[in-house]
Length: 139
Image 1 (tube, rainbow, N blue to C red):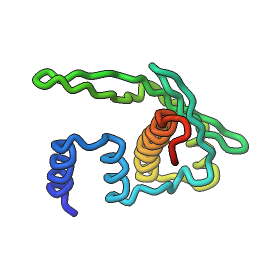
Image 2: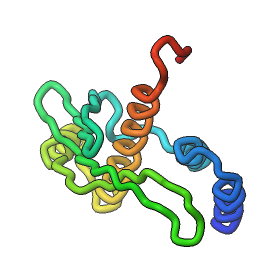
Image 3: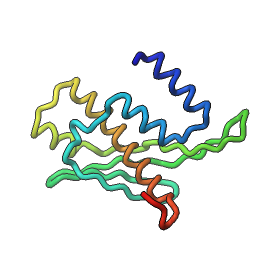
Image 4: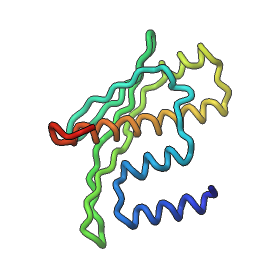
């Protein structure tokens, strides 16, 4: 699928007021995003209304990505939207551990950085979706 096709798909989905999490998950599937470098590293999400922390850990190393919750309101239409902005990433130890096990090239570092961004946001979206479900609703 070409870049133009992705743009058209996003325009259709966003125009239809589709759930942002659904859009992210769909794009993830279309792009074939799977864990490559972060495979086998544990993930835990914690947080509250204004900030969330996505923690990564293995036997030796740990790291975290911190997200701030931003509420946006449309200028032309009164649509409220919640956006998660990564404000900090302390993943140096995790990256060092990955590099120790499998030496990383410059290209690998770019891919790993992107994987950290995508994976941490995906984990955050899954966590928020899970905690937002009413008690007793099916998973």
